[in-house]
Length: 450
Image (cartoon, rainbow, N blue to C red):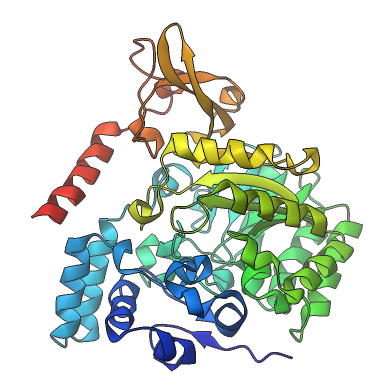
């Protein structure tokens, strides 16, 4: 069995490859950015996924190790000055928290619109945005085997409790599911719920099975474990017990779905991940794959086509291409919407129909998942054609609408209605706060210049 070794900001300098390849300036950059945004890696990622001879451009290195440009220049300098000056932990924490609050830590109305109640009790570890699906954040699963530098859930990992979703109470979850019979799917998310020991995960899953909730059809797991520590399903001491738990749920009539995060073909190539995927599928689960399209990591059609093809050959179902969310290091990763669509279209054309289950590029924005269908010319006006794949109001789904063409747009709040309309059709129920977003972006740019 491979011995699991975790690396954080405290011990990353113990990684032999870091000392062998990085300059002292690059190691300091990791410390500066890692004091603001979360950093964690492990020996599988370090030893089997990263090409250290080409680390500066290696997608998995960029995916896991903080880069200087992931912070705005003024934020970087503020933290760097404190570190060079020997600031103690309390001062560093104050500086980091101030910067974090300027990085839109909870996009898409997560705190203000998505947290439900049951019997007048706020479910602080639940989000319910789409009618059929509720998200559950088990408190023991609010970490990962390694952190993605683009992660839009980064506030879960930085020690700011006021920004964190988490709860343990399964009884309240069951009550909420019974009170909302249209909910068919519960998505365990985090963090990564599959970092939990099987005995802990079992306490949640078996409670849901034993409750015999008639509307509960699917249990999903939002997970990066297959990509970052496939040994969870092959070599860990409780790996067999975990697979048996999936089989038990399936026999109880509950569909088990992995929403597996794979961001680059390199993650699909090891023997360990191929073995893990096979074991999960043999336990009766289905693996659907998803990732955002990100500059510096996977912003080319060949990477996506290769990844989808390999996933299909291994028995997975390509599911989503997302757009980098408007939080954290968005400026570092963002791909213009038109370019994201062209990457998607080109990659889609390179694969057969069995891989064309994938949908995208999609923005998980406040009103819902908005897909960019393409750039067109309608009535003499160049426009984006869009539709909802999911919406706060189910009636919005699969209803085409149009936005003025903006070649620089990277998010929904950069778009305006086409054909002289004053607002998009959904804004009567959920307006887009473009002015607030523009002020935030403008403030960041002005600070960077000053």
